[in-house]
Structures are given as C-alpha cells and as structure tokens.
Length: 412
Image (cartoon, rainbow, N blue to C red; front, side, top):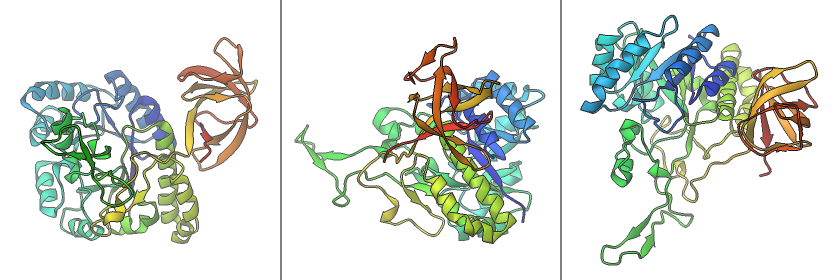
C-alpha cells in the first residue's frame, strides 16, 4: 500500500512555507482570481513563483485552484491566466484544480503540460463520473464530501489504477451539496460558486411573517438555539487505517482561509499519524491521545466524521453557537536567530515580557518558554508588543530554531 499524499491549504506565502516545513507532501493555493476563496489573501504571480520554488526545493508539490463555475466574462481572463502559469519556468504549478468543463477545455488547450485535478465542486460521487474525467485526461478527481468509505472503496475498484482519488479528511463542512451553494448569492448577491461566499450557513436565523414586518420569531430545532445550517468540522485523525483501506491517494485538509498556526497544527498532527500508521499500526494506536490533543489545540467547531460512516445525524450539527473553539493564539514564526540569543519574528498578536509561550516544532515537540526581552527593529526595549505585524527581536528562556512557530495557550 502506497503512503497517501498529505495535501495542505495555504492562503499566503507565509502559510505555504509553514505547510511545507510542518509536513505537507503537497500544498494547494489560489491566485488573485478564478478560485473559490476570493476573500483569502491569495497569491500574486510573484508570490506564487516564490512559493512554488520554495516548495519544489523541499520536494513538495503545489496545486493551483481555478475551480469557479465560470461565466462568459471570465473565459478570456482564464485563458490568459493559464498562459501565465505555464510560463512560470522552471517552477510552474504541478496541477490545476478545476470544476468547470469549459475551464477544463481551456486548460487542455493552453497548458497541456500541467496536470488537471477535478474539484469536488464538480459533484464527483460515482465511478462513472471518475471514468468520464479520466477519459478526458484528468489525472485526479476530488471526491464529493457526501461519500461513505464503502462508496469510495467501490469507486476505487471500478476506475483505472492511474486515476487518483483525493478526499477531504479534515476541516469545515459545507451545508450544500459538494459545496455548490446558492444561499450566499440569494441573500447577499455574492456568488459562492465564483469565490465570494459570505458563509450564511453560519448565521443565526429567525422567521418574519409577511404581514408583521419587523416582528421576528425564533427558529428552534431544539432548546439550544437556532444555527440550523451550522455543521461540526470534519476530523478523521482517529480513522487513518479506514481511509487507507478505501484506496484514497491524497488526504486533503480544508482551510484556505486559515492561519499559519492552524496549518502548522493540522499538518504536523496528520503527518505524524500517517507516518506512525505506516511504521507500526500499534504505534498509531498508542499515540492516539497525542493526536487528539494536538488536533483540538487549533480552532475548530467540534468534530464529526461527516458522511464516511453513513448519513450524519442531528449530532453532526451545532445548534447553540457559530463560534470556533480556540485554545491557542498565534504569535509568529521564528525567521532567524542571532548569536546574542535573540530571534527575529513578524509578530501576529499581542504578547508581553514575562508571558509564557510555547515553541512549536515541526517534529512534534512543544517547548514552554518565557519571554525575557522584546526589542523593536531599532533595538529599543519594549515591555509589550500590542500591534500586529511588527518586526521584533525577542529573547526567550528556551532557544528556538528558525521556522519554529510561537503560540500562547489561552485561559479557557
């Protein structure tokens, strides 16, 4: 059995580098247009070049999303965009993620040298659909989130061996079938299928009767609340062997809007779980508490196994809140260390001298460390760093290495 690819999302160059360092086999990113996360930071062409070069230097692949459902006005821009991606020598993307047949055809014409993966947005839920895309030249198909493990096994048994299956194993669940949502467009005029989703599935809803405007009536599925579309997050960290038996080639993590801390935590945990499972299934079972603890240390909305073991019941929804559980705050990534023991970081959230942080290492260690000194870029001492995105020089009670991540545990 071949070890599956661990595919991690990246919203920015910083997050891409974090994903690579913390264990990704491949990273998927979006450019400034034609992807389904228009509100993510996304990548300029120069950032994309730098990111792909960095990933390739570390033997990690990069896939670029172009998975909108295109309208007529998008087509000429898509063609030009694909020409630019093709021209990225020597480091062009390893694959394009596409859902629209017209966009697929343009990619085949403009950049046949780049592999094509079929997005989950194409509603890929049976083996005949997989065969169809393979016959047109697709190398990989991303399965719909609505499939069970048994259905995935049946697909694997009925498609060519060289056609890869990519499946979401962790992250937020969309309320709409394979993510093809009309709710955002209907309520706000922002089209989820063109990258502008406002996430109305997380909103709180009430009813208003036509003849009584301004008088709201609560919608209650039970006594706990009214978040009627709000799914728990998918998490399959406890079921790696079942995913392997289903014949999945790529384990995909959702989250192109997430921070470097989230990406580092999820990538590192799934990396170790996959490696442990392949090394020794008994080791995987032995380390289960560590996986659970680590995966719950990043932001999440409670966990579910989605459709993998059958249709989800009412316990897959969260009825009383739309907020994330958050145990840690992201402080920054260690850029470099000097001989005096100071590290340079671009700080992301407030922290102060005397606080206790954790040094999060790619290999799995979390090392407690006290903040001893903070200096600004001119060398002036600071008691605290309240403003985000400052370049700071920090001395800790424990010495981190370059590319380690700093986080602070919050009081729950």
